[in-house]
Image 1 (cartoon, rainbow, N blue to C red):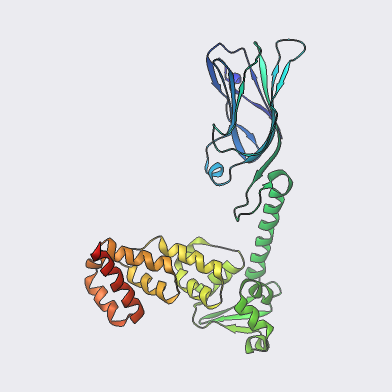
Image 2 (image 1 turned 120 degrees about the vertical axis):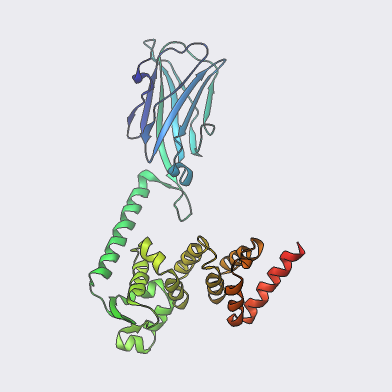
Amino acid sequence: MNDSAYRVETAPRLAQWRIDALSSTSFRKSDPFRIGLWNWHLTVERHKHLCVKLYPEVSSLTREQPPIASFVIKLVSTSSPNRRTIVHPGICDKQLKNHDDFVWAVDNFFSGRFIIDVEFLDLKVVPPSGGEPSSIWNSYNIEKRSAATVLISLSRMLSEGIHTDIIINANNGSIGAHRAVLATRSPVFRSMFSHNLKEKELSAVNISDMSFEACQAFLNYIYGDFKADEFLTHRLALLHAADKYDVSDLKEACHESLLEDIDTKNVLERLQTAHLYRLPRLKSSCLRYLVNFGKIYEIHDDFNAFLQNADRELISEIFQEVLAAWRT
């Protein structure tokens, strides 16, 4: 069988697979074809019935944003002049993840050559942030393009100092910023600029407990210019700033990141950080690492020194965890 036997011809919303006559028992799977954001496959199998399946190719995109499809699928005979057609009743807003999500079993089928014709009426995805599914053809790409353009513009406002109206003074340098952006992202900044405080009068905010580099990373995050390397370098300082200025999404991002690489060298620092900034999952993970996995014995001297200066409430929690582990 030549390669063209597996090729599916496509238009923007249409796919057609032309198939020669099938034997009484046969199976055929098409080459992948592109419709919308995904690669797709069709399969056709003949035993007692003819069975047609349509599904997206397995990929990270399919797992994270499976298509929610509406389509009309037909079988069209091309062996006779009158082109007999069998039409599926139609599929509306069906999520397709794998090869068992859409199966069409046809009882009364014709012989000879035929076409599997799929017309996609709509393809939707659930936005990464959640909410109602939206069409990739109506608004999805426009929204993505608009959001990307806004982020680029915000980044340029900061990096090029376009019409800045506030100065952020770190402990070793200053950065121009914009009151409106800061106030939008932080209720603390909003309060500063809304009342007759010195920050409003002087058009300056002193953040003397942050280095210039950490402060730059903080502003980059606020302006949507996220850089992974600087985030990892400054995440403890960023956590402090996020807590101080009530930037909740940044605080949660730092929390998630600190959970990912706990080890014997940093677990005591992470435990103190979790207690200081009220991060329950980080605290629980550190205590589990120390107690349940027995790492407390590997850093015995450091742990004893830690207890000399730790908060009493934290010490109590540690010993409760140790006692609970002994009971089990």
